[in-house]
Image (cartoon, rainbow over all chains, first blue to last red; front, side, top):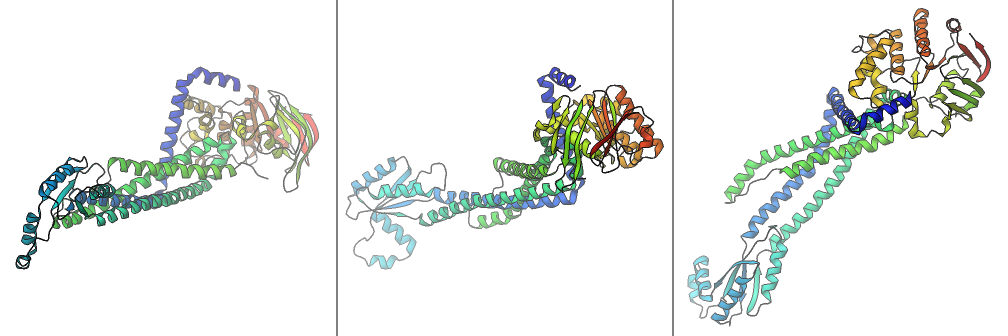
Length: 326
Length: 221
């Protein structure tokens, strides 16, 4: 009889078997969702915990992303001031300006002669009378250099590199880079980004443990069913399958909760932050999770749920064997 | 079909459930394992189903030693054996249809065949039409018949039953035993452990009597 059914399954062909496989998995997928829905309180609790665990790194990631966008905005508006040696002739200064302007990483370079500089300073500082008392113009000529921002705005090292390159040009006295604080800010953001990764790692492990523990409890409550299934010939894989899909749903549900939490937070903070930015004359707009990040959040949650369930189910299902000593 | 060769089983607690037991059940035969509780009937069935492993001796099923079947091979092996239990072992949160379909679902039977075969099995035990009921809505005798339908739905060549009538009143017990006989009549090898001598005397079936884990007699009823 076994042979007859083996022949039968061969005759069914690979296509039918594949359809059958897909059908069985789909059926288990739906059935495990239904099972979770029948225990709404416990399910909500688990999903809530996973959601919060996933929302934390997602929020921090969003914070870093927004901060980088903000600093990128500042940086593109940042100019370097190249102070020239006091005795540099005007036409040498003009030539140097053209040399600098020709660099690929420079958007524009404008020469400010010492006379212009003094006029500007007089206008800005309100120290007109005091300046009149000076016999000589104490200001050197300078070149205002606007760097060309290549992609990845927020990379302050490139800006520093440009400063270093300009500093060694003949006729240059010093280069003032008002970007020191931007550099620090970016360094802080880089550190934060690493913190996001670490936090995501730690909380990812937490999600694995939460799912693993929940699946362990699920297995405990379905002990009798598992025993019966094994008695009538259910393989380890067959017995494990519904728990894997259970873990998948827990993880995906947690991802959805996390996504909702983050989006709610952005909506709640976006308005007030926008007004603050507007008060400072900035166009800053708090961005929410883009499609890629949303997908990572949902997919990552589902994957973590699956892995946690796999580890837990594989471990605990082995221990359930029908019929110990009567 | 089933051969025990000098089989002994000692449980970790030290209790020796079977000692030097040898017997053979031919293909297509029906056999009663009799004896008082503790005689080793259940243990013998558990050894056949690979729920337990013998301490000594060997068991052949279908001409092959089953000692060589590893953990991974056990599910496939069990699909060739229909098992009926005294306590039915039904899934109480699933309707009858799901309970009976379980072995077919496990073996990957295509969906369109499932319903036909589940209904055929329920028809054989006289429960056609109860597919959507839950086990608690059925009487004990009906629950046992669902257990039998589940055991035979995948058409295994061997059917084993451990005290299948233990919780049934005489009339229902008789009915269940007749059901087993009917499966035997169509070629299924049937081994039933039962201590109900009065009941099994009414069937002309070989009896293997056990006491304290040993064979104490064989009789053809």
